[in-house]
Image 1 (cartoon, rainbow, N blue to C red):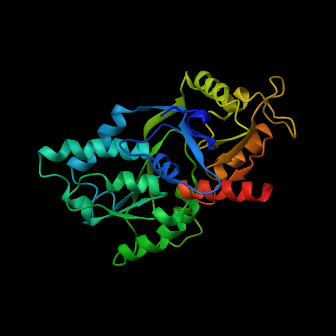
Image 2 (tube, one colour; image 1 turned 30 degrees about the vertical axis):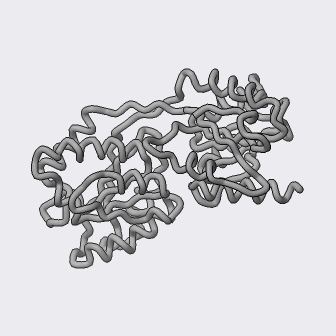
Image 3 (spheres, rainbow, N blue to C red; image 1 turned 90 degrees about the vertical axis):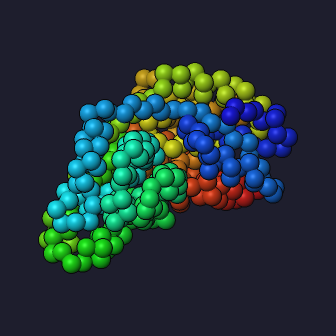
Length: 309
């Protein structure tokens, strides 16, 4: 959904550096309903493209077909972890492919952990009978989820001195905080949880991103203020270059530099992306959402703008 500031009188352009989720996008729905003294007009600017890895997805399919993901002690995995919508999308395809058989009823006997409301909603949308047991959506970040899992998984398998491993479907770009926390050697054998990561998709910057983002910046250039919401470190360099604030020689943003034209502010979805901008480009975003959600983004932006007045 492309839009400019002129399409909504009195609204502030909100440039969301992400692909619009289908069939519904929580950010689009949330900001289309916002009201009050500060109103936003959202525009999606796709940054990433994803490629699913056929061989790795075949491995997951084999685990399902051989009933190696379930509660019985003979199963290889006693639970699963998802921290990205793309991994959920890949898994949903495999679950749907199994509908011709008896389905996957054993998936209803295990805990499935996720972080963030968007990934949780994607899991909930998978038509599975019995429904999936989804936990951790309210944790907010991977570190909090990992500590939650240590207690929750221990209770789920309280009858076993050694907990069954967890299967973690991931992309090629991810943090390792969850596996490190769950497999920390300092934990006792009764607490430690083996995590097997399986990379099921790869991520890269879309070739069209910088061109499209530059064009949208031009279209919103008459706005007094505008916000850019960054959801991932990937594409950050192209974003800063499009804003005209990245020094081509040093690869850094000079202290105090802002883009030309509109007063442009930057919000990040969480601390990982914020720290990447700071450490890699020397650029400190204006705000960082306390929670990776539409409400979290709106709250931190409005709080910032309220302080300006």
